[in-house]
Length: 487
Image 1: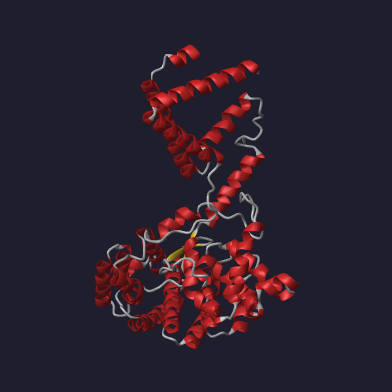
Image 2: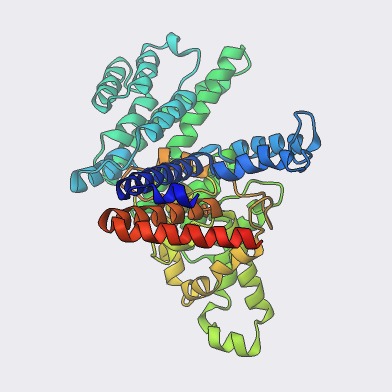
């Protein structure tokens, strides 16, 4: 070995170390790319899957297709897919009066193509049925809801009104997309309500005649509920809060099966604006049930109510000296529950991240839901003295209670891993999507990064000082040989 090293030239050292540096760099780049694409280290995976059996390890950890562990994994994956279902935002803004005005001012598009495409699918589901061919205006509107170009949709709505001046869905489209103020939108929705109620009464009288008439009644019911809900939201935005609350309560009484529309979330926000906390608690008592699906609005409103009773007198220094009272423990537990359900919300409530306009669809437990909640509820947290202070002192304690890695949750199901992908589709590209949990770089990526850096440094020194590095290499080789002979 010594004779071989003595025969090497300094240029060969440079070539050898340069090649090693290049190989180490390529290994590091590949390892980093593989981890960010698949969420695991390639070197670690190869070690576990191939090297461990060769070194006497067992293969029992590898799940067979029919094994219980494989069944658990498939069940978890199905559960994650169901939890990553995209929902219509109960508090979505008006395209013409709000989203378009934002585009005029900033030049940015607040809605993504994916989000608007989901809305188009919703409109076709809510506002069309198989009997549309019986009325020419409905046939035109069926095509209008499929249009992707806003001017074309608006033009089609006017064509439908020329054929039938009582076409409710045409007024709905104009109110949503052509009206540039909430006042104009409300005026159009009132015209839609007058036409929608007439059509709804006719459908009620004919609902038992055939399955087609039943389908038409469902469509007309959807249209009527949508119009009344949007009228309530117009009243809320124009400051007529009690009128909005009355419309929402009447809707929930008249159409109880339509709880999937989450009208109670609109009601909660309006009641908070009125500071009617007893009424808010009554709504929560009905909808914050273990058998019903949760949302950020439900969990964080429950936390806000419990925080309200202690936040004005809460002090971290005092609490650390005397301990937490029963009411404070209940408030902290409610905050932990809310944060576990959606960990993205506190950063928006504490204004650690900038808010943007909420999308038309949200992903429960995702960043999109956090934006939609904080956009409307931040003012309610600010109104209660000390509420944000208590949230700031306690919300990060949630993560110490949840097992990591997140094989299981604490109070809810494990946090779904598909939220980041869905949120990136729903939120505009200029928004920095909040990700939870952060992927930590494994040991092998740190190791390859260190190996790459050290090899590059050796290559640089060899290029600058070839003779000295040649002597140094010979010395290291002699020491290694001596140690090997001694052992």
